[in-house]
Each structure stands twice: as structure tokens, then as C-alpha cells.
Amino acid sequence: MSDPTKSERIHLVLADGTVFPGEPYGARGTTTGEAVFTTTMTGYQEVLTDPSYKGQIVTMTAPEIGNVGVNALDAESVDGKPHVAGFVLRDASPVASSWRSEQTLDAYLAENGVVAISGVDTRKLTRHLRDHGSQNCAVGPEPVETLLKKAREAPDMSGSDLVKLVTPKERYS
Image 1 (cartoon, rainbow, N blue to C red):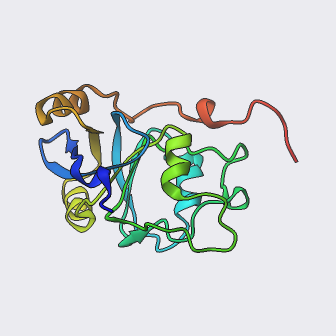
Image 2 (image 1 turned 90 degrees about the horizontal axis):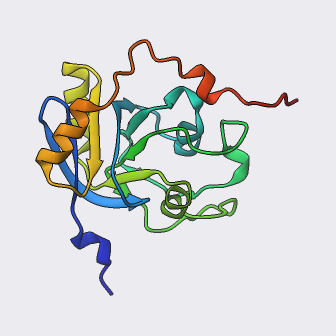
Image 3 (image 1 turned 45 degrees about the vertical axis):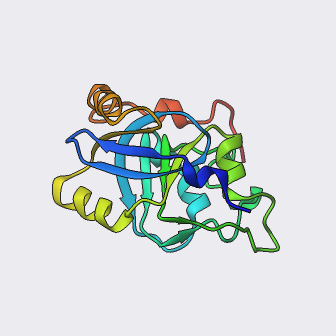
């Protein structure tokens, strides 16, 4: 049986007009944020829940993501919720094979409202960001021109006080 999402196309559009096509993954919709990358080979759940990625659309450079699934013990943040504005990957693993897995990455992202895109040439995107610097982007199913406008209108991360947005409201030990 074929995967119906493989026929859907969405795009990641950088503020400089560079376009990366892909397939929807996680939550459906549109998101904007600062496009960044991480070269970590493991720990995608820790990246997703790391408060330092607040407002950013994180590109994973490792080729396959999601193969161990997601579990409550591997969250980086106190509340266990993702802090990224979006997520970019090349190949999404169709199965979660770890005995510790509580759910698939796709289900976790959808449950937490994180728009993601798979099937992206993450090496090309990473080189572009390395050579041209981080910049805002938009990810979604809208026409490329609409996504470009949204990317260019997204708030600049420079000088943003994100600490107040990610700091727990209650003390914890």
C-alpha cells in the first residue's frame, strides 16, 4: 500500500528565495522561524526539546531520523515538550525500533503541533546556511511566493528575549 503523504508536497523557503521541496511530516500547517542546522548524529528528541532552539526551524544533518522513536525519559526540557518552531529531515524512518520507544517521531511531532518537512536535501540546505548564514524561513503547503513573503515578514531572532518564554514558571528539583 502506498503512503498517501508521499503525494503531498510542501516547501521550505528561505528569506533569500532559496526553495527546498519535501513531504509533510508531523503536524500539518505552516510555520516560520530562523533556519539553523545541527550536526549531531544522535539525540533528535533532545534537540527538539532543548529550549535553546526556541523559535528556530532545525535541520538535522544525519541522514535518517526517527528510528528509535520518542520516550518521556529523553526529553531535554522540564516539561518534555518540543521548543523548535519546525523540523527538517532528509529521511524519516518509517518505524521506531527501540524497546524504549513510546511513540513514533511523526506522531510525537503531530501531537505537539510541530510542523516538519522530510525528503529535503539537508546537505544542500546545510551548506547554504553555512555559506550564507542563518536566516528566516517558512515551511508549509502554500505557494512558494506566499511562503517567501511569510519568511521575509517573520520576526528577526536578533535581540529576542527568549529566556522568559522557555523558563519554567514553577521551581523544580
